[in-house]
Image (cartoon, rainbow, N blue to C red; front, side, top):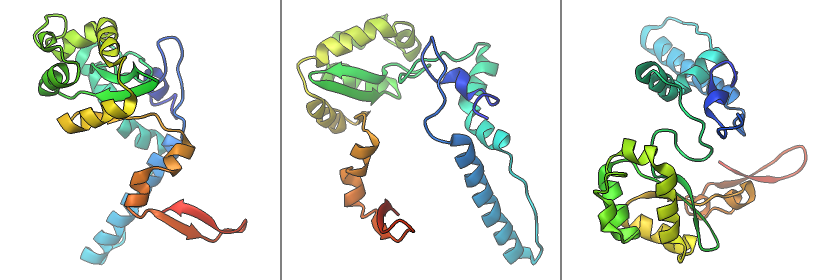
Length: 206
C-alpha cells in the first residue's frame, strides 16, 4: 500500500526510497474504521436506522498523501525525497550542533526573521536575496545548512532547544524507542498504566 499510494516515492533519500518504519496503511485504515463505526452509531442514535461502510487501505493511506498529491498536480512536478528534511520548506530538519543534532522546522517568514536575529545572531540574513523567501531558502538549502550549522557549532542541543522554545520555533531531538519510553512528557501527563498480559504485567502508554 505504501508503494501503491506513492508514499515510497516521497520517502527516503534522493538515492533510495524508504518505507515508513511503522504500519501506516494498517493504522490509517483502522482509524477510518473507528471513525466510521462512531459515525454509524451516531446515525443510528439520531435516526434509528443502521448503516454500513467499507474501508480500503488504499483509500485510507491515500487520504494521508494529500499534500504531496496537491504539490504534484498543482505544481506540475513530483516532490523530492529529502531524507529527514522537508521537500518544500527550509530550514526544516536535522542540523549538527556541538555533540549532537537538533531538529527544527520553520513555518513562515516571521520565524525566519526570529531565527536569524535571536538564534543565529546574523540579522543580515533576514533580507539576504538567497534566503529572503521560503522558495529562495529551499533553492539554496545546502548553502543555508552550512551557515546554520556553523552558527550552532558552539552550542549543545539542549541549549539550542531552550533558545528555540523561548523564541517560539518548533524543535525536537531524535529519540530512540527506548528514549521515547523515558520521555518526560509521558510521565508529566500520567500516560503510563500497568496492564495484564499472558506474558505477565507490562507497562504501556494509555
